Image (cartoon, rainbow, N blue to C red; front, side):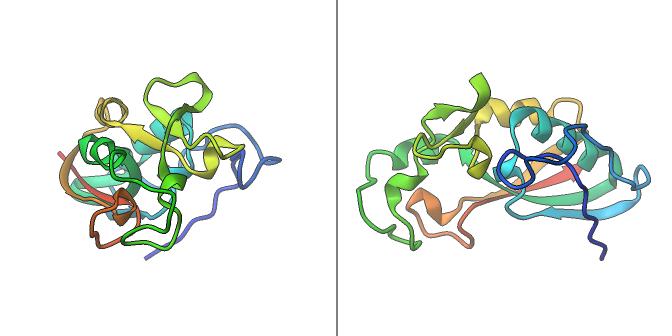
Length: 166
C-alpha cells in the first residue's frame, strides 16, 4: 500500500497551492486497486474528471477502484421528500445539510448545498455527471452501496462506488 500526497489546489483545503492539475507519479496499468474515501466529494467537475482519468490510467485490467461520492441519483431525489430539520435517521448531522441544490461553478452535473460558502466543502454529482466521468476512463461501475446520508441504512456515510478497469 502506498499513499502519495500531491500539492495541488483545492478551494476548500488548499487554496494557495498550485492550480495546475498534476498526473500521478504512477506507471500506467500498474495498480490492482485505488481507494479514495471522501476525496471526490471535495473535487469540482474539472478536477474530478482529470483525476478519474488518472484512476483509469494507473489501474491494471481488472483492477478495482473504491471511491466515495455524494451520488445524486433517484434514491437521493426520493430522500428529499422525507428529510426534516433534525438529526439524520442513520447519521449524526442535520438531514437538511445534505441537500445539494446549488450548481458548483455553473455545472449541470456537480452540485453543493447552498448553505456552504465553498462548493469543495461538499460536492455531489448527478447520474449524468457519473456518465461523464466514465466516458474514456476505461472504467465501469460494478457495485454501488448507498450511503446513510440518504436517510437509508448504509455501510458508510457517503455512497461507495466500485469501478473496474475493462
